[in-house]
Image: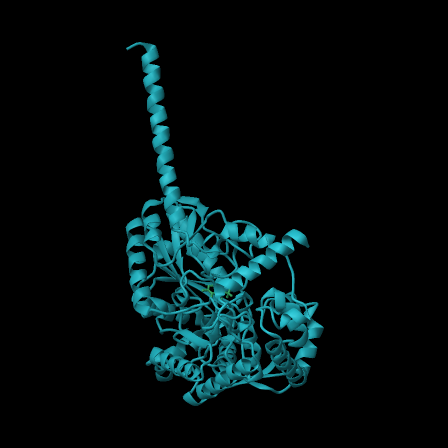
Length: 555
Ligand SMILES: Cc1ncc(COP(=O)(O)O)c(C=O)c1O
């Protein structure tokens, strides 16, 4: 064979290899695309780009009451209801509102939460006439009292921290502080109480080692960092809609100014995702927030996103457990680190958290919130080989993790009180028939709402609830104001998430249910749920899209 022929053959060979490599890459790329949820929540970059294009506009006073095309008599009825509610808010919550107004300009968080309680078209007018107080003065049992002396049933659950009731945490903080007082707030050296905490956490998590951090966000950061370090792979997989704190890599979409290049956001409960996990070589870990079982592939529900009545939720424990088992098997097969982020559900759904509740074991587990006994905390529990932060054979190759306030003695003291309580008969009793109790309460409330022909229902994962709406409407976000007027305290996401502490008695819950139904009846009476055959969720979305485009093009 001449030199020319040899060269040609070599070129063909190289070309063939290049084509094969490109086809291989293309296939992997297609598999990745298939494993993305079709919603915007599944396409973080596109969501961010589109979000940047949405122009501000708002409804004037006349349109505010008939944005859905309701006739004049209905708009008038709504206006009368709104004015009545506004007068009630301004008198009943006067002091709380006054203090909030004073602080709003200088506490950034207040400005943000204040602006995002309802869809932005309605926000300014609502803020002006139905201002929300941001201050509270005391708690007792399952109630919380504002600066004006109004007592509310607490449905905020303090972001999920409050599992055992505020009274428990007040005592835990005091008793925990007493345990460590002699040492005081010394950082670096440990108070001996930490040793018992670690032993108890090992037993509860079924894992070998523990590291302490200052928040759930930091615990997740560390778990992912460890997974990357030990697998020497770059990417984390998170599921569409799942919240894992506000660190950039776990929040790749709206809310983060820069893209997260090493995060794959994939479909929850999907064979397409398992295929990606089986075939890609860049995946270090899969992060699971078991709370997503209540609304797989959807973001945490917030009333500011209640543009129509499309919000749905439903918890199927068996289906989610089966999914986790499949995920576990693929992660084991591919040496991918399976991380359960139990910052929210840990200690709430079962003593052993989601691992016990769903019957699946993770390689790393993060805890936080309630575990601090009322003080700030983030914890990672994991297998020895994954928790190690240095390599014996490569002394300079370390996985760094510090934090001035980690293992703070006062936090360790309060945590100790919390963990001890779980071992007492009273602590164990709270988990008995937990789901039975909360499912019956949710079903009972739904039955009452249906009997009254009210277009509202709740779905729940144990004591974590969300409200959804069964008739197309543009005004569901108003419901949060009726609930507050009935003495039910909600967090800034409104009816998106109701979180109950486990010390709610039947009598307490009966009070909540009565007030909930009364609020829905008042809202119905005031005409907000007016319906018309042409008013559908689709028609609402279309109308908003038209408004947005018109604003963008012509304003
Ligand atoms: C599942 C989950 N992970 C992480 C976090 C972040 O925890 P933190 O707010 O303590 O930073 C949260 C907070 O809500 C959470 O729910």
